[in-house]
Image 1 (cartoon, rainbow, N blue to C red):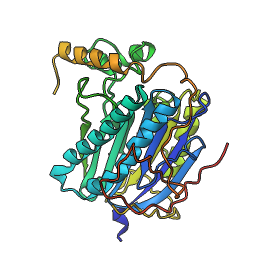
Image 2 (image 1 turned 45 degrees about the horizontal axis):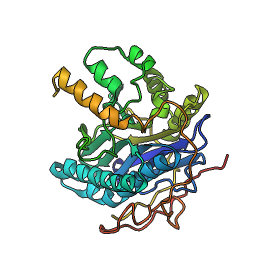
Image 3 (image 1 turned 180 degrees about the vertical axis):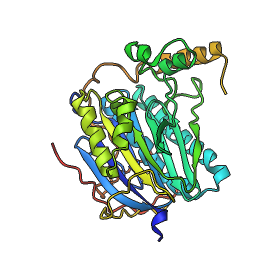
Amino acid sequence: MDNMQKITFAARSDTGRVRTNNEDNLYIDGVFLTPETRDKPFSLVGEADLPCVFAVCDGMGGQADGEFASLTAAGTLARFAGRLMTAPQPQLAAVAAEYVAAANGLLCDEMRKRAVRMGTTLALAVARADGIFAYSLGDSRIYALADGKLRQLSRDHTLAQTKIAAGLLTEEEARLGGDWHKLTACIGLFADEQEVVPDVIPALPAGRAARILICSDGLTDMVRDDRIEEILRSGGTAAGAADALLAEAIANGGRDNTTVVVFDVPGAQSTAPPGGSGAPKVRRFSFGSFALGLALGLAAATVIALAVLKPGGSDPAAATPTPEPSAVQTTAEPEPSAVPSDEPTAEPSAADTGGETE
């Protein structure tokens, strides 16, 4: 296949310097974290043919529940990835919404069983020959370095961002306040609280060179955007950029789990540095604005429900969540009660995660 139809990627995930468990998860062209590997430093570098799917999920609700929430979102995505890669462009947003509704329903069922609250963010990018299509919920972010400029494509679903957009706070003021991590939307809300629908981010057109970053707030809380841009523009490979971003987040305190996914989409005049040509090939799974009063009112109502999900302090210790891992080390299948098998599944990836034990 022509090199213009390939992308290079790198993913890193780490517990950080404070927490001992990792409530983040990710989805990389068919690979996601298992209960056995997620608390170890995770590294994956590869090359993929278009189309392919990438995502980061940041779980909330305490150790076991947050891990279960992000794993459920990643496992459910494995069932929908094939449709996201092949659906006609006008139907893509509907497929993404269906995926989110399915994951949300599974978490709501589990919350009723456990009598707990849990949830997860979602930052999802679908790279296809007809463009890059992205969707988000929560405060995990998607950035694009294209045409020499870094842009945040996603919008933070936080009470702080609502106040920033309304002109009530600057970003610096919001970072110092108590609303920075108060989510106004995520996967894990009951129907009588809020409809859970992902933001549909304007597509990046086909043929446009770009370096894409998807990350949890463990990165953006520790590293500011100007420094992120400097690292992404450094001229190195996707793997080098992912390594540098994670290292800087940890060096700056590493107060939360940190997950970064960097992938390069080449174009006719690429501004994204090429990835390493020797990277292993990964085999894929077959498969507006509202009035100020209304916006703040809806955000405040949702924050009440979400306050327990993302506390500022460390999460209480709890037992390991119950999703049953796949026999393949780099993928995981949540337990049947979490992810039903009523939709076709796919053949597992044989990719090596490259994770190392601390």
